[in-house]
Length: 120
Ligand code: DGP
Image 1 (cartoon, rainbow, N blue to C red):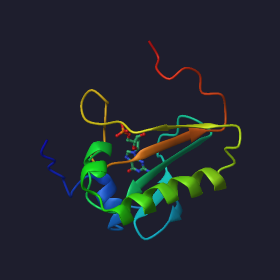
Image 2 (cartoon, helix red, strand yellow):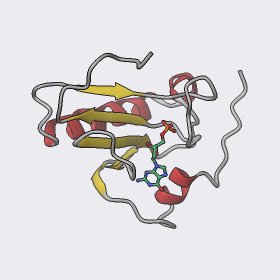
Image 3 (cartoon, helix red, strand yellow):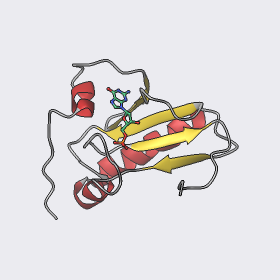
Image 4 (cartoon, rainbow, N blue to C red):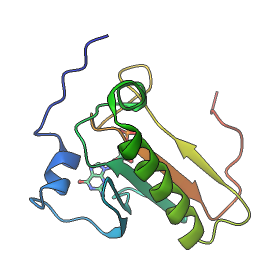
């Protein structure tokens, strides 16, 4: 599969500092910030700083350092957000995944019981 990253997507613009975000954590390879339309008491997005469109793109082409940095950011966000009772991590991809922003991101949701995985 060929991945064509759009550098004008909204998360690329957040990474360039062109639009603001409520950043909660940052390291060398990843950034975490509050989702603008929260769907749970905790709703944070973790994104890599590199130009990857989706989880499968990131898994296929990101370096080991980028992948480790990203997972480390996820761990730190969970630790700092009081998610001891649990959370859900969601990575939507492309049309069937209902992905709105074509820059890879993981939603970290929690702070209340989240119910079943999918609404039917
Ligand atoms: P997805 O469907 O997985 O691509 O979800 C994209 C999420 O990004 C959605 O929950 C709303 C959020 N979002 C969209 N635009 C912005 C923005 O400009 N700032 C922030 N913080 N979140 C955004």
